[in-house]
Image (tube, rainbow, N blue to C red; front, side, top):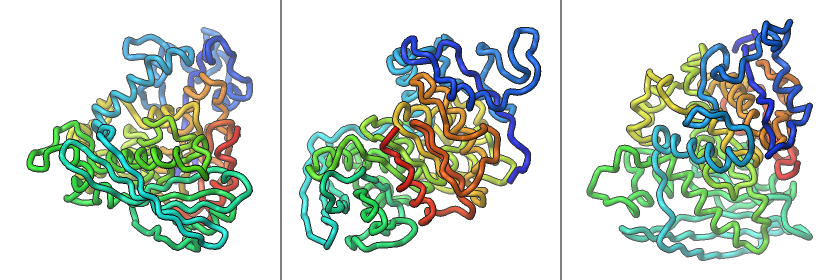
Length: 422
């Protein structure tokens, strides 16, 4: 871990805001907290960049989420939502995650329900049909018996397959009983039931949409993209459940599933919040950081170790990350104006917590368009205070002491972080 604060140059565009709305002064204060010293010859404080210059993070040039493909600055919500957001999604699909699976030709939900004390347990079999067949997977849902709808719903992409039908589960990873006692509903999909985490990742879901006897196109999404797509199919059901508030659903994932949760939430605006926990490379960590000086997972390493996660189009950037037209701070920004949540751990060198932090801070420039750029951090410098939640109107962050993992302490932050309120 680096004890020295990372240099972070952040441009706050003078014209940012929804339409002509000014950026709140608190947002500007936090974004510019790293800018100190006398003004230069152009009247800017020492260290603050000219808006015409590239965005830099830790001294390295990064693609600017607020610079359109034609080079024009994006100065308002209309330009962001009408043009720039679509450009970034297209670039991430083409160069990083691959083209997603399409919407099913048909989809069916079969619900079985049981009373489990203070919780209603539901198993929802989601059956989807594509051009090459029909298959299904289960969504496990635990709804507390509250006077009104739950405070919100956490939808977990579970790559461990560790969520079963027991509403009294109390592991740090998926503490169902703790979540429901706090007044939230908890739902989980088993990533393995959508795309197995290995060479057989195409079955069952991907092969519904691509001929099983042919190679996938180079730009077709692989396992991570399929897991994100599965979260979207789960959301299709959650929107219809009479016991839930469909406007209060957060998609959450840890580690490899954190990558999928971010990609799901960037694409699907129905998710009110997106929680990326220890997501690392191709999650919240910037690709251009390389190993971050701490031996973190790089683009080349993640593709060598897990060749079934991402398409060949992304593998081509191993060792040449600076050629990528996008980077992960822009993925976080695609969640705006909904809540984006980044959780890191001090001892998780593989995920590069400093890099995750820098992405989080850089995403604030897009949230500023909506007047929501306050990150909740007292400073954009690394490292922040540990073992406490930092919450802004639409952005949340915490850095837990300890190693890679989703723990009871992390869940305590999420359950008490008012993720569905501003």
